[in-house]
Length: 168
Image (cartoon, rainbow, N blue to C red; front, side, top):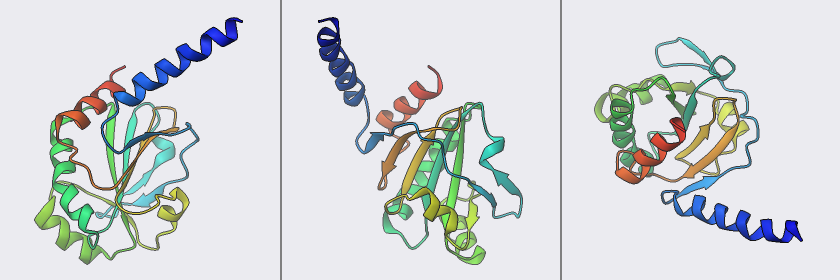
C-alpha cells in the first residue's frame, strides 16, 4: 500500500520538475557522456575526461545552419553573463573547415573558441538528432538534459534554469 501512495507523489514531483523547464529542454536518463577529445580553433587540445567537477554546456553547431546562426550571439551573451567555474561552454563545430568557422565567428560571436570536429565523428557519437543541439553534462560526466533547436539562451527562462542546475 505504501508503494501506491508514493507513485502519485513521484508523478507530482516529476510534473513540477517538467513545469520548471524552459521550452525545448528535455530531461535525459543520466547516461555517461560519450568521448569528446578535439582540438579547438587555436589548435589546443580539449578532452571531456579532464572536465569533471563542473557542468558542461556541450553545443553542436555549424555555420550553414540557420537556427545555429541565429542562436550563436545568444550563446556569446550567455558566456559573458555566466562567467562561472561551475559551467563551461563547449562549442563543437561539426564538419567544417577552420576558414569557414573563423570567418563566421569573427562576425557573429568573436569571443567563442569552438572545438573542431572536422570529420564529424565526435558529433556522430553524441547523436544530436540535428543541429543545433545542446547537451548539459553534470559534474560526474552524465548527460542530464538535451536541448534541440535554436534557443534564446540569454533570456530569463534559460538563464534561470542554468543558474538553478549549476548552483543546487
